[in-house]
Length: 336
Image 1 (spheres, helix red, strand yellow):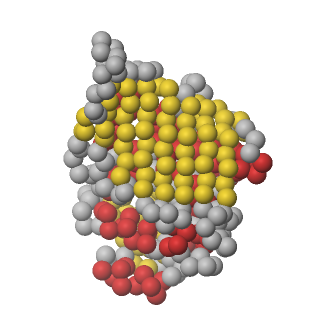
Image 2: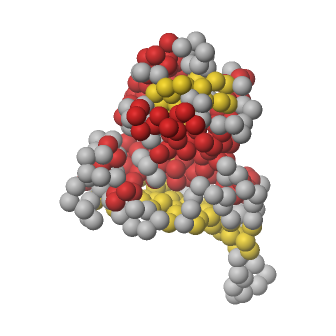
Image 3: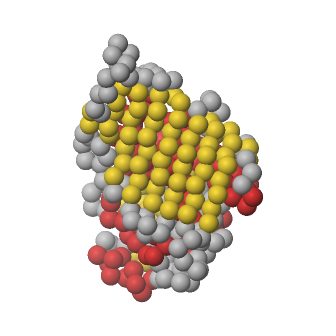
């Protein structure tokens, strides 16, 4: 079993701990560090977590195998590098970082020190998305033509003025770092790497904080197109629809953490004028947070350098950088 320390015990850090503590034989949280230690004390006591004074003390503790980072986005790369140099495996919440230079360095240092690095893109562990990946791979949907999605909610109203999630340096392009990068990762998983993007991003609902209305158009290297919108000053909703030459598949609901259902609809080439209703596919309940943390733990035990192979974590950051450049003037930006 991997013995982990949670770094950052805000709402999401606590959610990650609760998803596995006492339920998993692959990973257990034994320690933690957070800026809001007093507020986290009751939770830590309940879950048997020893609170340490600093991140440095966590890294110096030989009884800790791995760190799980639920910290502000701008801190990820430096914290990953420090953990790798201390010989700790690292699971970080998304995104991996805010620029490709720092994230590439973080991946390189993890490889040099032979520690496992994983990023919290938990959508990949949804049975519905895994089935959608198989449908594309087996050709059931036909040639991939277009992917579109949105991930929206009231995030702009959830945090008070002065909170780090209103800091435009921490959350560039509004909902992209908290929400949109999940959709981008799912798109990369299904459609491969992206070639270019045109984006726009504005603050329309409030007179302070980050942008709240962001949208973009993508072109994939394989030729398909894509659209993504994220609005963080509205009611909760999300969806993703994949269009192929043989039909389409769609996932989406108000709640994105629970198990998804999927609607599928195929072209009937023998009766092209008939409008068939979509079929609804059901999937077994899955805790994607537990699944991603256990996947990370198994990868660390096996000595795998990247829990999710293929480099999508770094490419996701390259996509984010291109979105930020494009949003400044509306120009099409290439994604390298």
